[in-house]
Structures are given as C-alpha cells and as structure tokens.
Image (cartoon, rainbow, N blue to C red; front, side, top):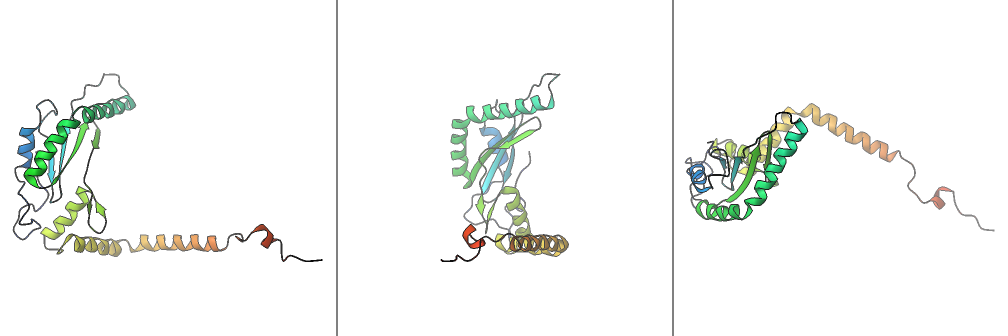
Length: 200
C-alpha cells in the first residue's frame, strides 16, 4: 500500500493543528471497503485537502481480444463498478470525511485503464489536483517555500529561468499573430470600402 502525501504529519510541515491525522487511512480503507470490490488493498493517497482511494478491478480478457476490445472492456468494467457501488461509496466517503476531515475521492483501475471519478480541486491561486498540490506541499515541507502560494510562485520563477528560449519563441509567435492580424483586410463595412458616397 502506498501511503501519504509527502511530509504528512512532520513537525514544521504543513500539518494544521486542527486537522485529524491520517497515517492510518490506507489501513482503514483496506478494512472498511467490501471484500469483493478490488483485487487487493486500494492505493490511498493523502494530502491536507483530500484522500484519493483507487482500487484495481479484476479483468478477464479473451485470448484473442484486440487492443481496442480490451480498452473498451476495461472502460465498461470501470463504468459498471462506478454505478453499482455509488451508494456504498457515498456512505464510506461520509465516514471517511468525518474521521479524517478531508474530502474523499474515488477511482478505479482495470488492466491498463485508470479512471478517477470524483477528484477534489482545491484553490491555490488556481485550481490544482492532488499530484500538483503534493508538489507544492513538498516545497513547503522542505522549507523551500512558506506556503502553497509561495511555492506556486517559486515554480513559476523556476520555469521562467529554465524555459527562457521557449518563452521567447512563444512571445515571438504571438507577436507575429498580432502583426498578421493588423495587416489583414479592412474590417470596415462594404459601403465604407467602396469610397465616399456622392450626391447628385
């Protein structure tokens, strides 16, 4: 079982005093979920906003199935699982949210297909999913940044320093678009284009 978002619970990290600990979340979900849902213990990822629970569904492809058939079959299995477990997942999510003080999100993997159902998007000057938030939290926990907003600014500055050439090309391309637009046909009305009106 993979566990927690980096830095979870360290002193001096981003753990808030009033946020319930979640070190036991993988074990709790492994014990709480019905035995027949997944082939093994679910993958549980934790940060301060969300607990994401992703389990593996059993797949039994026919030997001669094409890649397209396999992908379609896997997508169908995930869709069926999502629909058939909806009410039970809502109950478990409510219990988990009460226990851990975080939103509970779900996903499933079948063969080579993975789908996330209800992931939480948290505002951090913009809306970020859990993997992006974990990058920011790692920077905060390591002392590189004071907050998520500060970490986001740090990332932007880092990209700017390491992508100057690409950004210059992008700006040049945008300028060229502006030049082409400005050199385009007169946008005036047909009457205006035909010259000033004369009177008899």
